[in-house]
Amino acid sequence: MNDLRSRILHCDAVCVVVNKTAGEATEGAGKGMTCLPSLLAAELSKDDYPMPLQQDALPLPTAVHRLDVPVSGCALFARTKGALVFLNAVFSQGAVEKRYWAIVEPPKSNPVEVQFPENIVSQKQELVHWIYADSRRNRSTAYDEPGPGRKRSSLRYSFVGKGRDYLFMEIELVTGRHHQIRAQLERIGLHIKGDLKYGARRSEKTGGIRLHAHSLSFPAFTCDHSTSNKRITVHAEPPLQDSLWQAFQAAKLSSYNAGAS
Image 1 (tube, rainbow, N blue to C red):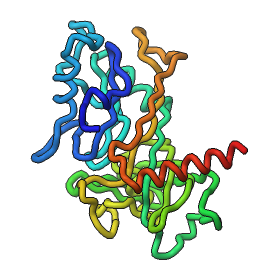
Image 2 (image 1 turned 90 degrees about the vertical axis):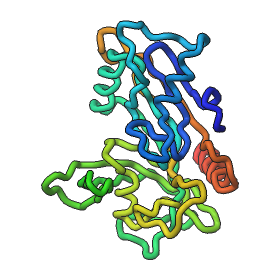
Image 3 (image 1 turned 180 degrees about the vertical axis):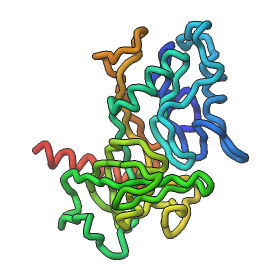
Image 4 (image 1 turned 30 degrees about the horizontal axis):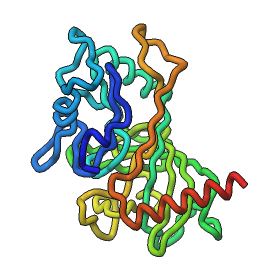
């Protein structure tokens, strides 16, 4: 799934959503990183895409839903100044639904906060922490109580199954802090596969981590910047389709069917 055109999930004159691969930077690409906004600008300049109004167009698509470089999945970019203002506002107002898939290492010991049902498939639970983002180290730490520089952070999660060596989680991100999911899971003794920065045992061969933004739902842009009744909803399958992600998807389907019966 390296072809960019095949990874564009939604495109109109004001915004675009792409299924980002691990290693692509949504902003501020450093040495050795792929600059996704530049790739998108080149692709969207082709005649068969909707074109934004020239007087309002941004020089490059600008990230609204920022994903960490090693994370894959739904990444939202504004194409116009008006859409950027609107989309930033609906994100800050909590009007956006963000769901992730994560493959995590089982904890060495079972933290009190995590309830592991016998068959591992669980009801949704909530985690609330206060996160401090250290910009110098590019790392966040989750705490159980408020403190200087810490921001309240919330997510909801459930276990959808397990493989031979890993647990499969679905996560709804309520707030949007720097490295939030990675830091909050670390706090309760869970580590995303491949995420050395947050305690994983070993890295991934691809350089990414097993965290994937599976779905994104947000209000459509309106010219007066009001919240629209129309929503744009996209789903992205993991760009890396290997046996581990396939096992996750099979477990997710099984848990869905069990809940529907």
